[in-house]
Image (tube, rainbow, N blue to C red; front, top):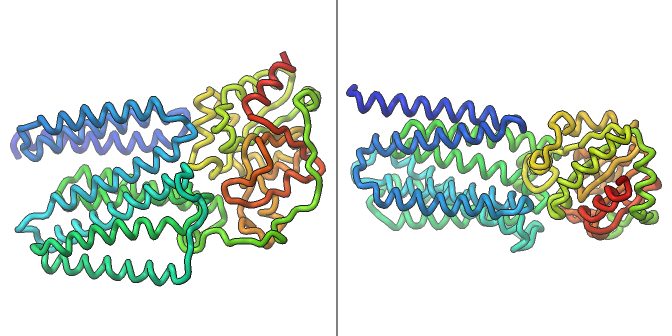
Length: 453
């Protein structure tokens, strides 16, 4: 092995190590930025080593792509709102899938052996499904298309026929790689199946879908790595694929649903009679809410997507500090699927410098809930819905939720009585210990801050 080859292999090892340590850093909020930076440096090292390994000497198009892509990425990272971060992640997954599809297609050559052809098929199929599936997920999250499950009679039969056609076209491609029609048919079917696989899944399941598509993008990259015989791409794809699967399982456990149920069932529809809730809504003013909070010694804040929409994380931090100065203990209850992507609430609160040790997971906050004087629900709906425990006919029955209804008093901050992303009525709003503080969450909390001041 000459010096150049040794340098390239050492660079691959360094890049792989940076990926692993970076991924480990992403497992904790206080090390996430460092982990993200390490992974980015690892990717830069991997790209440079891969270019040297391929013996490429004309870098003009590569440099142009780096500049254009870097500008687009920097602009997107700066301009995207935190409320749109789930949609951005979905697009990232999709572009990763399309990149693998293109790499797999470019790897096709006249002397490709059977193993290479199979890896090309996998990179194209998984990449295509990831691309269009992610676009549909983006549309549902942004509500560009209906966030509800799109279902029709015989849908599973149609999807099964598409899968059979995908497999058949892949086999024929391996047998006749010189015939372009099989390649084009395989690409078209993979793109179609990505759409058909995601449209029957409701918006409330999108956190799980994003995690799964993230895993798909990694598997597609891994297959592309085998297709072009690039070890670091195989390593990176395997890491993304494995971590995505693990995260998907965590999300499914948090919803008490199997992955097959998420992918093939969606939320069942319920009749109006089943969702009708008896009771009376009891609104409360900012002034009255202040008097209750002023006397509280224990407060739990339960954030949801509404907090992201109102961009209220900074005023929430300010209110937390005022409550603590008043002698109250303040904690945050974080449900694993709160928001519209895994870790959405953690990112928002970390942005406002909320201490990490006050961000309690659902299993940690629930045992304390009966001792909480005031639970403040900010824009959360489905993850605090007691119907998951009490109403067997509810589509979310059995899903673990944060038991805010067991607190002595519950403040629910909402703009209106509209249902959550799952479209399910919430009996919490009608309970005796619940008070509704209507309006923009940021303005309502700002009013409480002024009362304390």
